[in-house]
Image 1 (tube, rainbow, N blue to C red):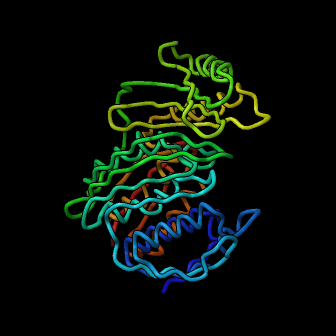
Image 2 (image 1 turned 45 degrees about the horizontal axis):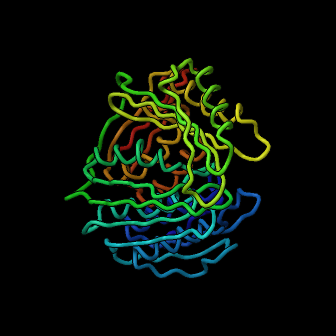
Amino acid sequence: MLTIDGSMGEGGGQVVRSSLALSLVTGTPFRIDKVRAGRKRPGLMRQHLTAVQAAAAVGGARVTGAEIGAQCFTFEPGAVQAGEHRFAVGTAGSATLVLQTVLPALLVAGGPSRLTLEGGTHNPMAPPFDFIAEAFLPLIARMGARCTATLERPGFYPAGGGRFTVEVTPVAEELIPFALLERGEVKRREARALVAHLPRSIAEREARKVRDLLNWPEDEVRTDLDRSSTGPGNCVIVKIGSEYVTEVFSSFGTKGIKAENVAKAAADEVKRYIATDVPVGVHLADQLLIPLAMAGAGRFRTLAPTRHTLTNAEVVQTFLPHVHIDITQEEEGARTWSVRVHSS
């Protein structure tokens, strides 16, 4: 049984989720200590416990010690079980992060699966549904597995209550590696300011600010008013669809933050991406490590890695010691980095 130090790297929930995902993929049992030791409130919170429970359901696992606030637990996986699964966070905790935990194993499972996930779908500090559906899953399709994500209703902090489904058709044999070294010609651009149970004027102010900061025409920036969510919420989503990749950037409105600042946060991230020729943004880089490690090879170009990405790489190499992840700056002083996954 592996022993995982939950305080490694950024010391957050990423260590828990990646350990669960890789345990299911490899069949390796583990014990994790110092869970989320790098956070102000260490231990398992509701969304992390839901991820543990989801992984246990998908993997027929035996779990001991996992409860709210727990700072250590053990996880012993069984056989991965494809089919119908439904997971509810029960709070505004991120449902997309629960998906991140169980999807890798289902990509190589013995049959198709249908997941229904409930909770937060558009949360700060987590990939929004739009990112999963339009940036991440198309690259998974390039690896030979087909995944279709459908949003029923969004869920924002603090009410939650969002719901989406994911249909998974696994690979016939093994995941196919890929190299993503250039983004190619930009084919489409879209910015969307979304409000739910809040004045539309908030979205209109955000849309104006995005247009000004990115110098985009009016037909590429729009506002949306959602009436299906269970509580109020606001976000700005920006999509850049290029020849070889689609990237999705987001920012979220919170009480006391001006609409213009929400728009600026998203626009600034877009401008950092556009200023280089890399195809993969920092958040997508984080998401690609596990599937490429499962494939045993792959390469992409990105921006400077986040602590999340570096932590993820460390966890991957703990469960898959034959896989090596090289993260290197392309030139001294350059803003561009290369990530290479290879097997020994």
